[in-house]
Image (cartoon, rainbow, N blue to C red):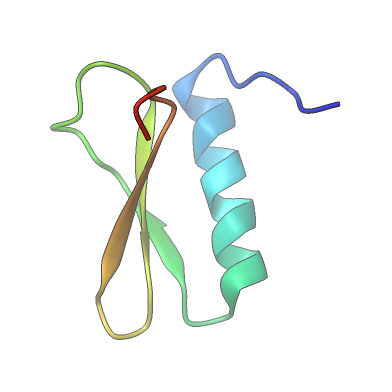
Length: 58
């Protein structure tokens, strides 16, 4: 069963775990301009970013 992420600290830990699984060159960064919910960027070694959010639209 999937656990529900209810705060930014939990969501940050989840994004960090995903980045580790993607590879050693991936990292996470804040996404402060995303106001509707929890968010974090996952950035690869070439600087390409993919926003990760808890928005139902994603």
